Image (tube, rainbow, N blue to C red; front, side, top):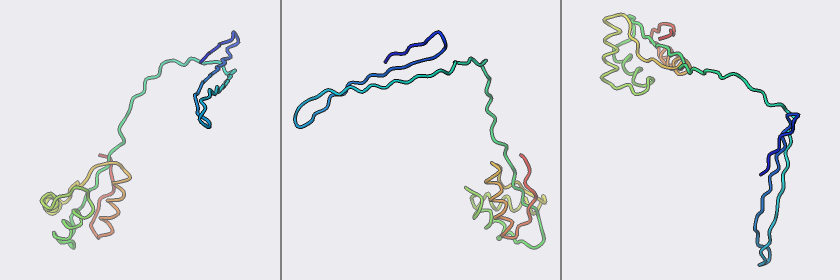
Length: 132
């Protein structure tokens, strides 16, 4: 591979590749040549500092009401919230009943919207999604 830089800032690159092939029992050599040219002037940019920030997390909060039973709330939590164990679902259901609300899940907005909608459709009383 040859790279040439002209004084005008143009860059030319020539790549030669030799390949051995067999055709009808005879070995032959085949040479491929590619030439690339660019007249673009390279530009230098100052070093940038990139800071990665995690996506904001949102809380799903179930509110207490007078018409959903303990069993129904616990069943819905186990059905729609990932990795929800029966013991954790019952603990959260008790928290909803005795404290008036419980945060049942925290995570990215898209998933929070889905779980919130699913629990709402089951008739649970839900607080609006809020940032964690």
